[in-house]
Length: 146
Image (cartoon, rainbow, N blue to C red; front, side, top):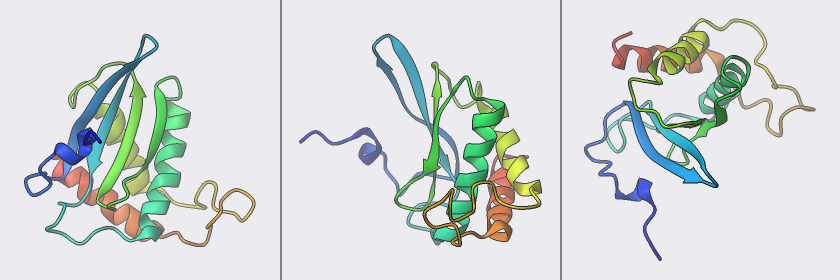
C-alpha cells in the first residue's frame, strides 16, 4: 500500500505552527489541507481529549460561521498534537493565516457556553475543558508571534 502524505513528514523535525499538509484537486475543485500544529510531536505532551474537544467545537463553529464559503472541515489529529483545517481553493501558510489567527483569538477570548455541548447535540458533551482550550489557543498564537 502507498504511504499517505502525512506519514512522509519527519515528525521529529516538525514544529508548532501553520503548515500546508496537502493541496488536492477533485472533480475540478481544489482544496488545501492545513496542519495546525499546536504541540511539538514526540517532544511535548499531547493535548488531552477535553481541550481538543472544546477547540474542535469552537473552531468548527468559528470557521463555519465566519468562513462558511471556504470551510470543508476543522477537526483534531488522531495523534493529539494539532488540528486539520480543509478549505476551498489553493492557499499557502501566509494567504490563509489571517482566518486561522482570528479563530484562535476567538477561542482564547471565548466566554460562555460551548456551542454544541449538550447531550442532544454531542455524543460526549461532558468531555470539555474551556480553560485548557484557551491556554492552548494562547500558546499557538504565541508560537505564531501573535
